[in-house]
Length: 123
Image (cartoon, rainbow, N blue to C red; front, side, top):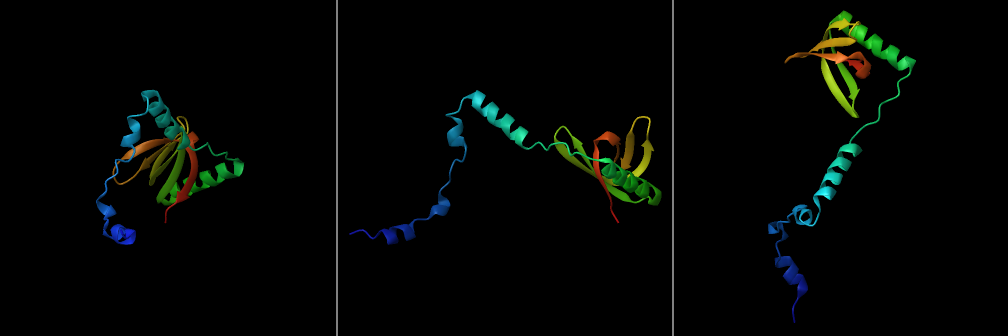
């Protein structure tokens, strides 16, 4: 008579290598694969936050204070369903182009004022 408990105890499952999703891809049509990739992109998108007048005032105060003190600021921007994070010191603000030049230790870049959804001083 076979003792199954002894058989299971001798079985080493750590050496079993599963092929993961590869085994299912061969049964899928290219249209299905494309639809799944598009779906993964769409579910990662974040809706645009609705900011009111008080939120805009708080962002403006943080930006002004960071520029006066010449300290680093963390800015969160929303673009095309994605939240982008930037941190650095504000060099200048151009109200005609509606941009901010932010300088971090590696480079400097321009941010659009209309994309900013949050600003926090880093002290």
